[in-house]
Image 1: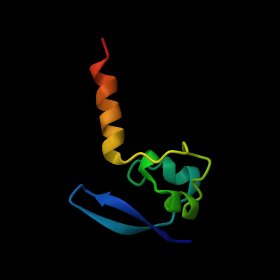
Image 2: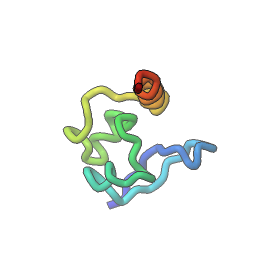
Image 3: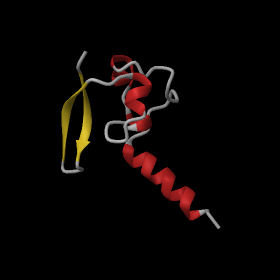
Length: 74
């Protein structure tokens, strides 16, 4: 089964790409996984419900969190 997910394409544009992976297999694919940035609709369609925290964080929010973690490292 193919479904579509909005993914950044080399950070140049945003496009919906057909994706054959779902669930944990999708999350483990570094090229396709958006981590907690999957929308609630994408989580339902891609069988990700329950595999990610409830809150949706954008890629920018994820990057800011990671920057803060690096800033407090000794």
